Image 1 (cartoon, rainbow, N blue to C red):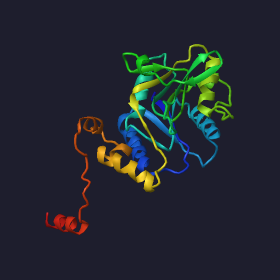
Image 2: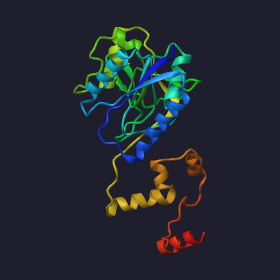
Image 3: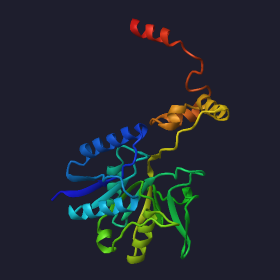
Image 4: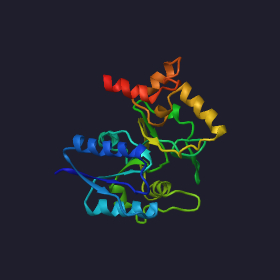
Length: 260
């Protein structure tokens, strides 16, 4: 019998910069998971905790093995679903796993958490040295920006599964609730799979112009926003601006294009 997975998001306002990556992800799911039954949940706009609970109910009703959450402001690795599935299918100790992601506000900390005391949860900022040889990091809580969850957890943990509070997000709530009701819940981050987090667009002013100009000249502004696979090495190796900074006459460029 084919295994089943529910892919769920909560749509507010999808930016074109990330929308293409969502389409690419869905395409790769169809290409890569040929032996899986795939379901989708994208409800009308509602509070994020209610939307996540609704996705869980849909997943359980359809007898899904896994639930993959992604947020509508994430720039996704096209194979993120298949890669995270491979992790949990190969390792029975993993029950929740998130791709590497960063919080979209300064100081842009990783979206992972650990207990430093019994009841004190904090951001897991200096995580790099704790990643194991397989690229996995065991944590105490994650976000649900690009996260795969074993549906067996939802059968053992009572609802509501996701609750947004004054001092916690709905995803951290679920992770801590699962840890409360179940022993040895394996919550991990996959350091080898990274997703981008859409930031607010900058406003161009006299002050920001200097910063944006420097970013464009030293790197490649568009590539900083939506980097291609080879950008990191080019940015590291380059000595000259990656893009010309001289203005080019668009009429001349168009005429040259017609001749070619």
